[in-house]
Image (cartoon, rainbow, N blue to C red; front, side, top):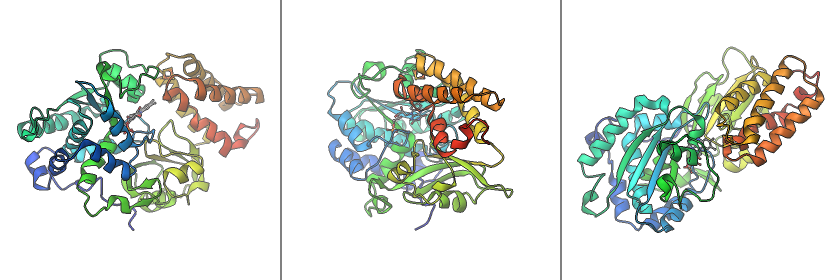
Length: 416
Ligand SMILES: Cc1cc2nc3c(=O)[nH]c(=O)nc-3n(C[C@H](O)[C@H](O)[C@H](O)COP(=O)(O)O)c2cc1C
Ligand code: SF4
């Protein structure tokens, strides 16, 4: 089995992303037509059987989410495609939009049909504004071909897609902050419940998924050979897009079968670390992800194996850092990111990020005491259990995992 497969990315390079005729010529929208002849619950079951987990970070069972959204009865329901892609070193959604925008439009429409929604919203990160014309063109051409809009293909199904852009805040990738941003309010998370599936955008029932999660669906619906489930095993069936970056010779987005080892991703696909340097650490799943060192190289990339090794899939990024960057400098950089991106709404995250930043700076100056280290650990732990949203809960994942993997650095007088 190859390391770099083509299931989710099978359309890449096969059609002109500005032309619906080109997309139709490779079988585009056949999945939507097939879906509209099915019962929505059967579509949700198909996704559940393939054990697709959300690719935005939380790995929530996608078939279950669609089934739960479908079960909410309301005259007006919504779908959101989260294209905020704010995690550091994460750029797989950008590739999906750039190379296969029609597949995404088709997928969001299939979701609308499945959960009985009438409107879909794409929330595109500000930095991807160059992709707006591509998406607007795909929406317009799909409407012109009656594959989107009113009475799609004379089935009586009405569904419209709207494109919104963020303003550059990382926290707006979090579902409740995202909806406030679309509503024109300050993009700050709110407490749950109410859950989005009951009361989301404009207080209407809303089903939110990530770009990659959506992109799988049309291919899965047309997968008569059951290719997708032939990859991976257990709870990690199918394939996954990983964004490989940092100190590797060949950074990029790779579609891997679940179960590929971390070593093969970094040293075969990424062709290893350049310039004769050695591996210092690897961060999985963006700035909010945990870190490990070379001990994780032979771990298969699956939800369960990564978890057992102390990290998670998260946003699907793999950031490789070589020996030229110290662990402490890496943590300070991550901390700067979170101190900047905290929305400031709740105390543990607002104050905690600031205090940890100050202690890390003290460490860098060689002035930190063992009591500072103890405080830092305490603050990080409190943040992870008492913050209002996922940002504050996960901001200290890198620090807390570093304390386990590199304990010596946190002994005063220890080497970085
Ligand atoms: C601080 C924060 C930032 C997030 N950023 C993103 C993002 O950029 N893209 C994304 O798809 N999900 C992001 N998420 C996760 C979303 O809240 C949500 O779980 C996801 O969009 C659901 O889609 P999925 O089930 O397909 O993964 C973020 C969560 C948090 C807490
Ligand atoms: S945890 Fe941080 S980002 Fe989330 S609401 Fe609180 S202050 Fe804002």
